[in-house]
Length: 444
Image 1: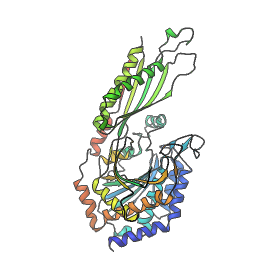
Image 2: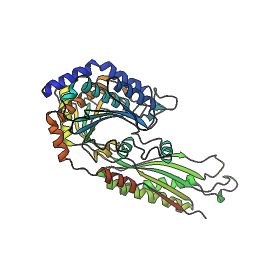
Image 3: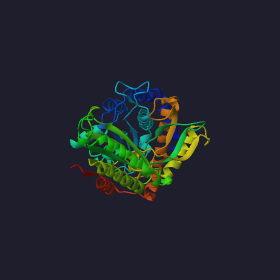
Image 4: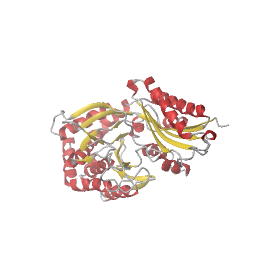
């Protein structure tokens, strides 16, 4: 059976199951859960895959699930991923009672991945493909709720805060040769797709300033104000901003999680969650060193203590050009043959743990429309379910066929030409070397 016929069968099967695919996305939207807590979302994805008659492994990294197909084939393996976790935006009209909401579109990703699986499995196309496929609902992409993830680390339930990092660590991706996923994005005017994006990597930081409590009215001179240390540190960081190169797209984000206990006591403990983002690994490390000096100096100036806990968050994303080209060709076919709606390349200061995978194996990570309003905001909503859920499912399935037909020669050629930044071993070594705790104590 030729490639054109295989694609026709897949597209027909996805169309036949369109309502089921969209309903899966809607169901996950109604059960927003933060990273490593995606119990209900995992169940939805798992039951959907099981309905296709395949074996499913649940809780691949605390939560999440996957199925492995064509395990008897000798060809390359492609992992198709969708992310399970939500964000927090209490102002969104659909947020649940604790503020969780899928306003980053991860429910769309999972539904698109499931739609791709329907097309490949239920069409009968799988037996004509000369390679293996893993369909994966993966946990914990958003780097938030770090106190909870730290508690999981302390109990040795996870090594890394990012779900794909954890999958790499656990060896679940050891035999994966290529990976693909997509992400929703709001577009302006007549655009609806970005093929290639360069995203930032970042260092994740948990900072604790420790001072000394005293009565804020009677004896403030006896205290050491931890909140003032945090404020001074913020000013120090702001003074560094002109030292960052524009092309490095450095972004430093902070939020005070705990700013003191009661207003009439000098704050003795303040905690900050921070991200230091940059376009390259080298720029990440450089900017983080400057931030650490800023934090250190604040503790020194006020005679307090600072504890800085650093971990590598996510690495920069750089998708594979050859895979991008194949996906683009299929997407253009699906939207009527015109490239007018497509943006070939963007550079963004956002981050994703899919970037880590792209440093090790060839990947694609296009951005598809179908949503309105900025991601992570109260204005976000899905305005075109066909474009959001169905078109990406079809484009990924068609791309899989291109890669794995005819002895998987296209996939093999891409894999052979790919130049990884890291091996799995050097990646894990890099992560360990850049996970550090620094303590500076100037209290008398």
